[in-house]
Amino acid sequence: MIFIVNFFRFSRLHTVIGTTLSIVALYILAVSFSAVHAQAIGLLLITILGCLGANIFIVGLNQITDVEIDRINKPYLPLASGAYSMRTGYVIILVSVLVSLALAFYLGKYMLLTVLLSLVLGTAYSMPPFRLKRFYFWAAFCIIAVRGLIINLLLFLHFHYNLNGQQNIPPIVWLLTATIFVYSIVIAWFKDIPDMAGDRQFDIKTLTLHWGAKQVFLIGNGLISLVYVGLAIAPFAFDLAINQPLFSIAHLVFLAALWLAIAKTKLQSQTSVRQFYLFIWMLFFLEYLVFAVAGF
Image (cartoon, rainbow, N blue to C red; front, side, top):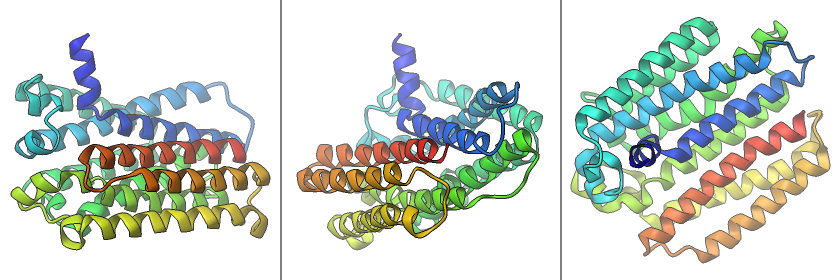
């Protein structure tokens, strides 16, 4: 049981949930363009397993290369706390990446491209000589490219091609991609706010250290707020073939919830900032649900 709890910590459960929900939402949107095929659920489940393998490899590799930093910033993680040996960490990421690559080859070109691009960027983010996480622009680029572009566009094409034999991207998916693109920017910025001590000690040049936590916090929340206002208006301004009232009201609710959370957050408290960061991930999860339900 303890091993499983630590495995959830090692796999960074919020990223696993985010990956799974994004895949399910893209699958639902692809299914909405045609009748469900008999093999559709199997395709969905294998896709989730393949993507989670890549996800666990990327976050696990980051913990292996960052173990000294994590002993300051995230001492509860299994490698940093000593709950897992480095050998265990290597075994988990090796098995994960092999499963991911095997399933990607089996599932075809769009899935393979998704996994390969994600693995390349995830490895470059953490590993020398690149170690792109040292530079705030390239660190954000890796997260934005994978979460904001690669997953949404290529996985939708993966499902759309396999289910419907089509390779076009409809407007609703472009809107989803643009929305998640902004979320990815903010997540890339906000993840560093509670980690300033360790990042400063190990010379990780984050935007938070460059601009200051308050400015990053304000700009990031301003971006999300603008997105919510735009999404509340979008169904009535464009022909998106979605449930207009549901989509619009949901984003007005998200906007109100965001500003309530902002008012409660104390930037001087690492715990408060971490809670707000996880709240942004919760909004990220809900975004995929809203798009899937409104667009089905």
